[in-house]
Amino acid sequence: MMWTWLRRLRSDPETPDMITCQEALARVYEYLDGELGPEWTEKVRRHIETCRRCWPRFELERAFIDHIREQGLPSVRAEGLKERVQALLDEADSA
Amino acid sequence: MAGVDRDSRHAEFEAEALVHLDDLYGLALRLTGGDEPRAEDLVQTTCLRAYERWSQYEVGTNCRAWLMTILRSTFINEYHARRSRPTPVDYDEVGEWSVFEGRSPEDPEARFFENVVDERIVAAIDALPDEFRLPLVLSDLQGLKYREIAESLGVPVGTVKSRLFRARRQLQRALYDYAREAGIIS
Image 1 (spheres, rainbow over the protein chains, first blue to last red):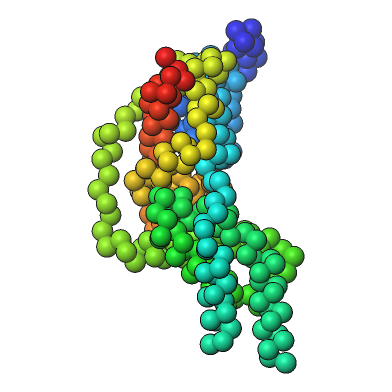
Image 2 (image 1 turned 90 degrees about the vertical axis):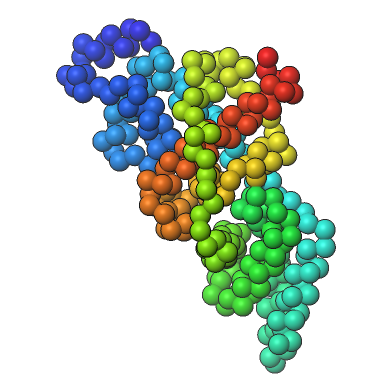
């Protein structure tokens, strides 16, 4: 990772524009949610690619959101609900 | 003739729509923060509305998504009607500190949340105040964009961002505390 970082420092003429960790972390959710514009998405992507401190944070935040998505909306059976809905539809039919 | 049409409409609705009842109820529970009677009412109103508008639905397209949209908008309308003024939210309670600070993704303790499942996750989401829970449910469980959430809730996009940020932090904290109490992490 260090080598990638050094290589990027040398080869990338835009390195002085690299954003800070604080700037990257402030946008973690917008980045993961695909809500940053193309310019900031690129800035954040370049930052986390090379930052030892931010990359783990972004990975964990991403895993956390994925886990909530998978677990947060179980399908739930409510006793008798189907029958109550059917009765409502019957009522609507006869109205 | 009208009776036959009615019977076929009823049968079609049962086959296409009512098979999604458990999913609708699941979403209704998250939106209402686990309020079962309110969630049931919401599902019933949704089904009735969908039935009335059944002619607008194109058979074979995504019925589940169509029903979820009706349920969301029914909930949001009701939410605006019952809420004369916003519930005060204690923003100070949610600090900037993250449970992931200084952790590595390879560290099993940093991935504590993966050992917290089902009803614990659901209970932690339901326990969030409305202001935080709704952006989180609409974003993470319904896949809405920030702009769509802002329009639904009638707040600026910036407010959606900050509430979603706080909702996720508060949820992380709640699950972290639970994981510690349950001995999942030390």
